[in-house]
Image (cartoon, rainbow, N blue to C red; front, side, top):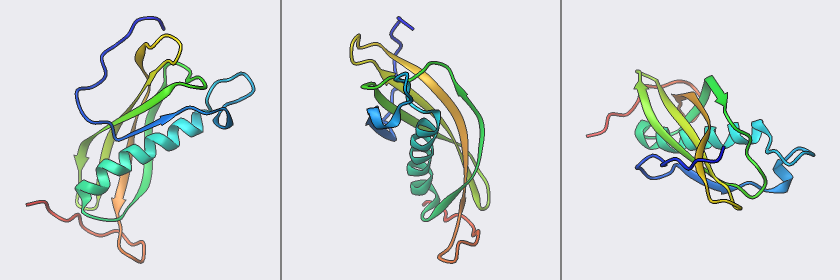
Length: 130
């Protein structure tokens, strides 16, 4: 992918640099590593909105568009798309900036659902924001 795109006009939920330990022998970053970053990004946004502890309960429609390479700057953006009584869902986009060329573009997107839980890990109702 050669053309640069404009990243979403909001603060990132998480940003990392792709390292060799997270890559396969061909130099592509493992999809599981990207999924973990996306889960963290969604959780960052949803934790704040939920008012406390949450746990991941579902990942839906994750799509990998372009490989992430060693040295890429990985940025995940998350937006809350649905809030239920005990659950909250976020759409997460993963963008990269290539070290060599500086292009910025989307590489992965997906939907993550979390449930608000108490200290015993039982679902509880969301706290309402004033």
